[in-house]
Image (cartoon, helix red, strand yellow):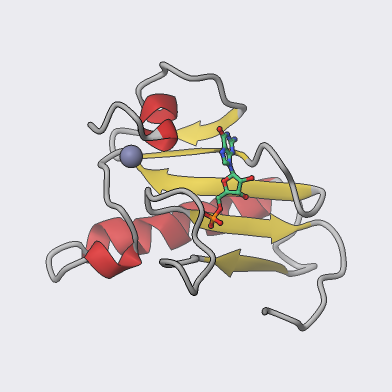
Length: 115
Ligand code: 5GP
Ligand code: ZN
């Protein structure tokens, strides 16, 4: 685990976070600077820097992020209203934290703009 990775530290329980889900392989917690009433980050416990680092054989890990986010969207009452799932990757993708994470954003009308 890279000591300097804030999401690894959250996954290890070494840094505080508002955790809404965890299991053996994943943890989800509320974003510290929410962009909407619900803004949750779903991450693998394993340090993977970005989606660019994913390989064949990690389908369960990649798919698990979406399935967990979908379940959390239901818990947050957003399943029928709609919501957005986002993975930022690398510099031009505006990724700030270099530990793979899926944003679950919703609870208000989002704009169509993604850029
Ligand atoms: P990115 O731009 O990398 O896709 O998004 C990183 C997200 O992580 C941002 O929305 C930011 O607010 C959030 N974030 C950064 N540091 C922390 C932290 O220490 N705790 C929590 N809960 N969220 C964080
Ligand atoms: Zn990490």
